[in-house]
Image 1: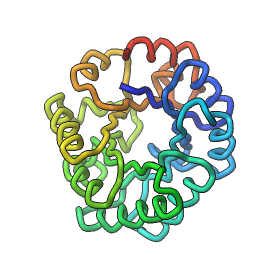
Image 2: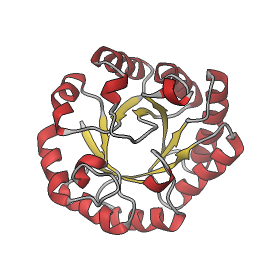
Image 3: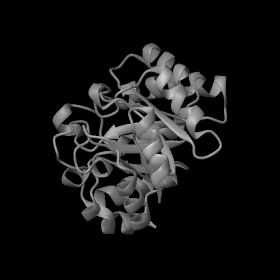
Image 4: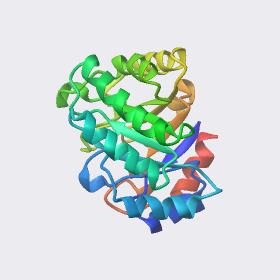
Length: 233
């Protein structure tokens, strides 16, 4: 499993790198679970991480606005993101998801086919009225995306593991792999979830709060990144 850590600024990105993160995922927690950061923040982190680890950038917990989403995706790719991650929060159906992901993938891949596109759904989809994660792998494959992810939409201390059982997550990971996609799991992951994650063995686990000492509004601490990195090996 690779460890994806989500900083919101350059200092936190340095801390994540110092701790041994495999992927630096630039986001803005003030704007939601997958809140988008500013282009200059993504660019600065991409320059810091160049030649060391890939950089991911979130483009928001998106409403069903394919044009807006595609433009945001292109912007993230242009300023240096290796992975462009779209959260389909306002998407209600598979048809809407396909239209969104078709535009996002085209925008990114037309610019640079080497860049990867991440399609993200939410484990707590029922309480936010979003699309079930189980419907996402087929959409992502058909659109030409590279990776599917599950996260929590509401950051209220409840984890993905409260909304999806181990068997649910195993099915999500298996379905993604059958579709030729990489699979990431995130959503208030703690040290107490690591044994289950090792059994599930997703390609990537995504964290923020646990490496901020339990409060995602605090700052990333390199020693906690290092501790988590060692624990997932």
